Image (cartoon, rainbow, N blue to C red; front, top):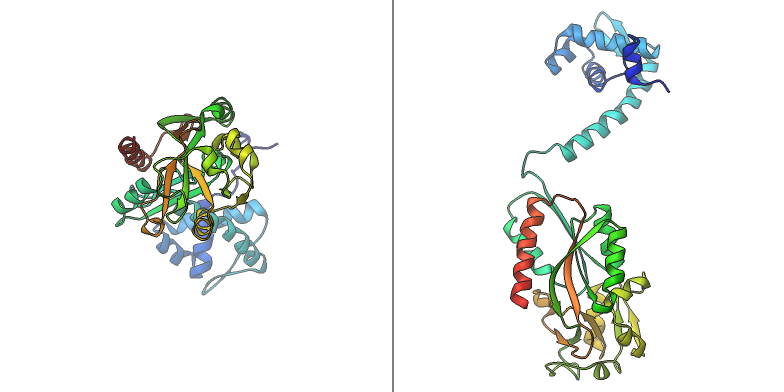
Length: 317
């Protein structure tokens, strides 16, 4: 296949450049090579030469020269339409990635439901309220978090897993090129409404919990449940409700005697003050931590977020 380098070695002119596209667009807009040169702050001869080179390259006449200036030929009109696709996409990419420092801060987090992470995220928002930013807080099951971090959609993932699942969990992370960082060990907790029969208990055992309906988020990717739900717990659950988001889960907890499970961290949002968490003391413990893509340099925002996250984890222990 012929390449740009081979053409240069042979002394042949390279393909049309983006600068030439800009010159042709300016001439078409102004109707004059001299006015286009003034708009672009370049010599008139440079613009004229660029147009002639492109016309020669593609064997067509783009402009018709008249005493009053230049006008697009029919072929030139079609050519201009085509090169505008290139020009528009170039400006899109340039505007997205070529930004002054701090003009556009980006940070995205993916987390399991009912795990630490939202309070530090809200604090990060508060600290950057007067700046331009693109932030993301995404919740889902373990597979969802893995995929988002591995693909670069999220900078960091917040997860937990049971002690018995640790070996499988670490192997799956390794396959995806992810690295786990420990935050805390804790009991698995139930999340229930404050009117639930178990609401006044300081702790519960599994046999007290399983008679009630169990709300789970792992229906879309059942394999994700192997990390976050104890086999002992799963085998004893009789009534199971599948949901995809926390709002649906909390609505169910409020109207029935159902429960969900998680790490015990509670949202600081006042809307959720009626949902409480209680440890299940006879189940295996869980480990909480954060994920990052291997060999990835964290941004300043990600580091700032992790400092807040670690502070919350230390306070909770």
